[in-house]
Length: 175
Image (cartoon, rainbow, N blue to C red; front, side, top):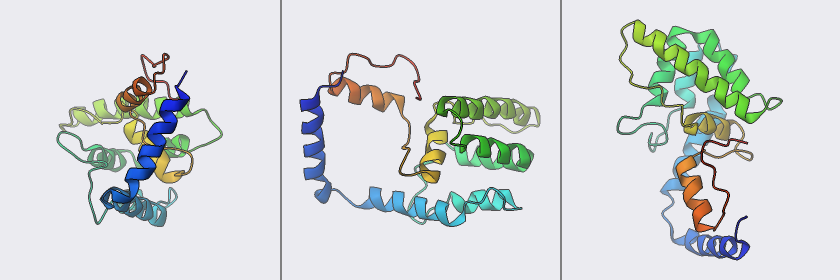
């Protein structure tokens, strides 16, 4: 159970600190969300170019690119390799009539399968970078920004500890 007094104090502190924060974080989110909303179309014939346009930013690519972290590059490789499979994986991931945990787990499972196929073709990717659920949740948060946010179990555990929650999930708990 979360300590209500602590969560109220953290919310107050956040609201008080918000005006003084740099606007870069918000600008980055707005820029990325705008590009996604403007371009995303699962039915677009050239899905690869649509995907590239949807996941670009004039500010930064740090949401999906970093040191040893390039999930968008791998996803573009997947789309090049199996465009229609990837299109249907995104359809399934974004289908709100299905359970969230099943959608994300299926998405990651098929990314695992495609990674081994890509490696068999000579591409060297150590990972597809979707297994921690951050990227699938990012796709969901771009598609449904009022319903989802980026999933980070490490951050979730830190927050729950700070709020004195005794039920910290030992493993992923998407629901």
